[in-house]
Image (cartoon, rainbow, N blue to C red; front, side):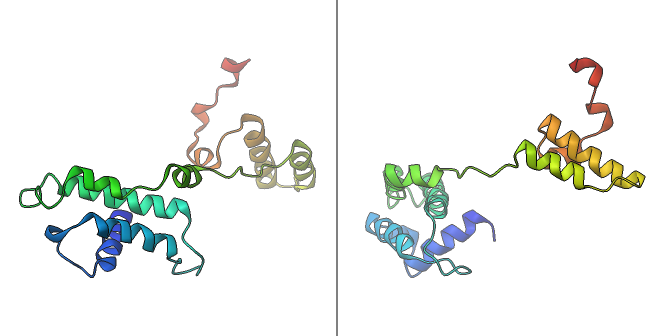
Amino acid sequence: MDVSTAAIHRFEEATGFRSFKKFHHEQAIAFRRSLNEATGARSGKPLSKATISQTLNAVRAFFLWLAEQPGYRRPVRYSDAEYFSLSEKDERIAKTTNAKQAPTPEQIESVLQAVPHASVIERRNRAMIAFTWLTGVRDGALVTLKLKHVSPAEHR
C-alpha cells in the first residue's frame, strides 16, 4: 500500500468508513486530532509531526481531487481540504531536518591509515574512500559513477 492509499484508509477508519458524500468538516478536525494522539504500529511512540503532515497532505490532495468529481462537488468543497492542515508551528516542526553527523578529516585520515593495502582490492577500497572524501560525492551517486564522469585534467 502506498502512502496516499494508507492515509486515505486511515481517514476512512477514523470515520467508520462513512460515505464521502456525507462528509462534514468536523470529521477532518476529529481525524487531525486522532493523528496527534495516535502511536506508530512498530515503535509504539506517538506519530512524528512529519508523519502527521505527510498523512494530512495525502488526504488533502485526495479531497481536492474529490471536490472536482461529479457527484461530490456539493458535499465536498475545495475549502474543506484546508481542514487537513497542521498549524504553522507544527508544519515548521515537521519540515525541520536533523543535521547528520559527518566524520572529521582526522577520522577519515585515521581510517585511510588503518585500511590494509596489501592486495589490489584493498588498495582499490582505500582509493575509493579517499576519492569519496576528496570529491564529496554522495554514496548513492558514487555507486553509479563511471570513470568517464571523472576528468582530472578539466579540474586543475
